[in-house]
Structure formats: C-alpha cells, structure tokens
Image 1: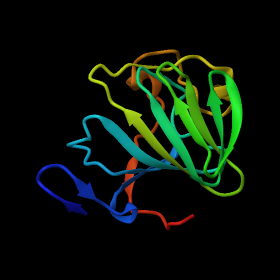
Image 2: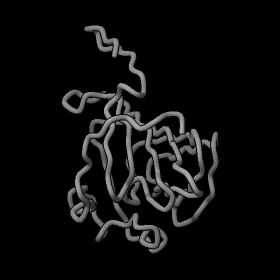
Image 3: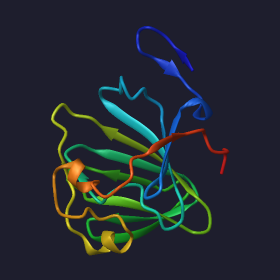
Length: 163
C-alpha cells in the first residue's frame, strides 16, 4: 500500500484486508478498521452461489453497487431481480435490499455506501429474504440483534483474482 500523511492511499486488491464469513462470504475492505473512511465505505464482496452478502436491510443514506463478475439475485423492496456482470444498482435512502450469489461461480460486487454522521439502519421482516437466509432473526434497528446468530467474520488472505 502506498499512503501519504494527508490521507490518500493506493492499494492493490491483493494487499487489502480480506474477511470471510460462513454465512455471508468474503469481503475486501480497503480501509483500516481502526481508522475507517469518514464519508464513504467501499468494499468488494465475493458471494458464493446461494449466499447473501449481509442481512436484508435499509439505510438512511444512499448506496451504489456494480456487479464486476458472475451473477446474483438482488432482493429489493420485496422484489427479486437477476443481475449479471456490469449491472449497476443505485439505492436511495430507505430502499430495503440484499444480494444473493447465483450461478455456478462466485459473484464479485463493488459496494459503495455513504456514511452520514447519524447513520440509520433497519432490518425489516421479509419472507423472500428469509428464503435465502438473509433475514434478521427479528425486525430491528440494532445491528447486534440482526447479526446475533452469526459467527463474526475472520481475516483471511486474499483469494485468487480475477475470478
């Protein structure tokens, strides 16, 4: 990683921090967990077929997504949409969503989210999300409740790239 004291950085995906979860697949984070980017979160998620990237939720800030490779299902406001490489998704504040890997190989998604000072999350009840293992155990605005039954992510070495 190349980083200067005024905050800018250059990092290759192979040198970034990678985490894995049995429930939600692999994620690449370009930021230091002790010093996260203050305004925007940027990650790449690798979803195995049938695995969601997180719990079905909505946020009080916009999020944007670009499918880089593979295919997935987007569960959005109770609907289901098939996505493939180079499909772009914009979620304004208040749109409930989650991605689920599909096909026969991993799906890579670039995920970008705004981080307002008062970050609001809500995990609603949704039968479609429950079908894919992406529903919170109960409706809540507390991430600790939404993920209470999930094993924490563990740091791993970068997977082979490209997929």
